[in-house]
Amino acid sequence: MKKSFSLLEIIFVITLISIISMIAIPKLFLNITSASYTQVKSDIALIRSAIISNKNKNIISGKGEAFINSLDDAKINVTYEKLFVGKEDDILLQYPIIATSFEKKEIGKWIKVSAYNYKVFIDNKNAIEFVYDSSNGTFDCDYKEDLCKDLIK
Image (cartoon, rainbow, N blue to C red; front, side, top):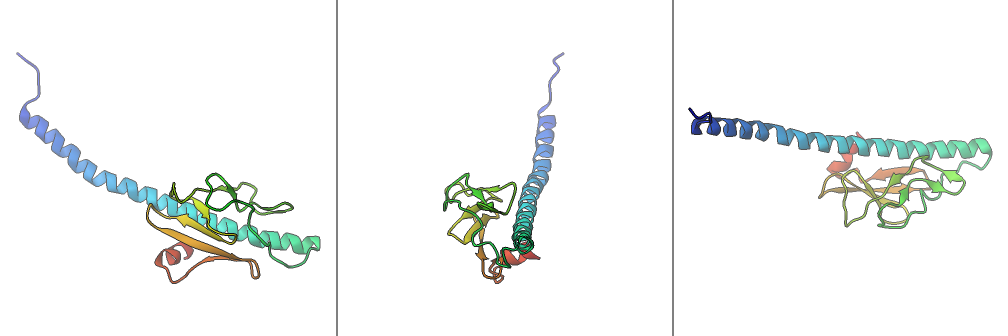
């Protein structure tokens, strides 16, 4: 007597596996997207906090009430650059955020677009641009964009 599976048993198992995968795979990608959103929100809060902390340090040390002129010396659109570290004696983040580039478009990673503009990729298609204004120390995106509203709230 041969021990093997019948065709009906194999079809039943394949059907169960396909139903489970149809439910589980979208949930997995939803968690990845949620994790990148959380990481970006954390980065924004960290950068803003560092800007304010730097201003307070300048006030205490007698350098004045000015905000830092530039957030870093990183090159524009270059992978693995250290972002948001400040300049020389004006240190912002102790542990920098490592940049990506427009070619790579890594989710949850930042790109330096110009001296004061940065973009962060929310997914493979969508990026949000943030602008640093050194006159009033703001690091904000365009509040008219829905993605910006979701990140800032």
